[in-house]
Length: 291
Image 1 (cartoon, helix red, strand yellow):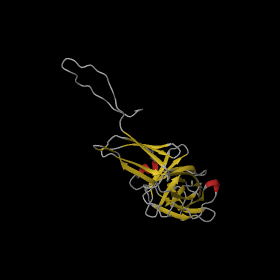
Image 2 (image 1 turned 90 degrees about the vertical axis):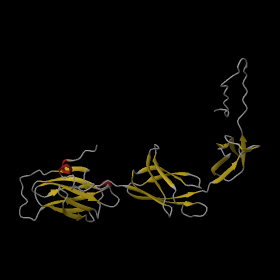
Image 3 (image 1 turned 180 degrees about the vertical axis):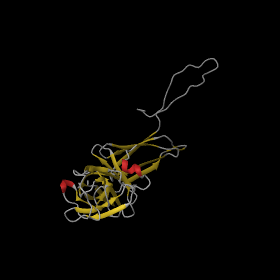
Image 4 (image 1 turned 45 degrees about the vertical axis):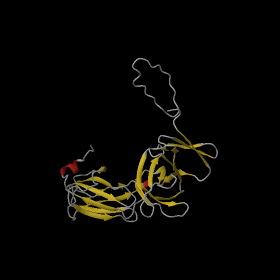
């Protein structure tokens, strides 16, 4: 179970969502100093991102341990903010900005102005569009899968009406994006996700040809027949086994010349001697070679 910080445990019903991730605790070197004479005790600092770059227009909110908002500030161009604490005590400081992971921190106010800087880690988004290569039309309901370089799954989703997809909070770096849609050949491509902001890609899918049919014997459709598809170079593209209706199908094929080979089960011969009352239980198993 996730560890709940002490300030959240004091008021579990009122602490706002997202404030349980603590980055640091700000303390004061001179707790004996007094903040009397002002409307509150200032809490000031800077909100910074990657490589200490200032984050402008970030929202900084000071709340009490019970979840009451006490002050709010929007950072300036240099990333600076200023809010006021009503008195001595512990408070929660929340900073958020577009393109960054929200950050919650516990701030201890002991009587004099507090200097507290917040470091935000960027989140990387991946947006894209899936289209048909031949027509340029968007492809809806396509499955989009994102994996890292080790093949571990990072995110999955499906495209919308306009062929669009979007993933947020991805780990920056090299990923593989695989797209699969009915009637199209699946495609995978490498993508470099930027450190911050949104990376956008477009994926064009080639239409996949389909080959289907029925294997028939003199008595009707032949079930469990082996159908092998061979391309013009002699490579086996795929194999299929007919169903009870004798049907087979191959999908996602490239255009070109193919050979279709259909075979039934090879005959099986066994030797046995019958005497006395006869033989019960002489079962014969038929199988394709290699099975």
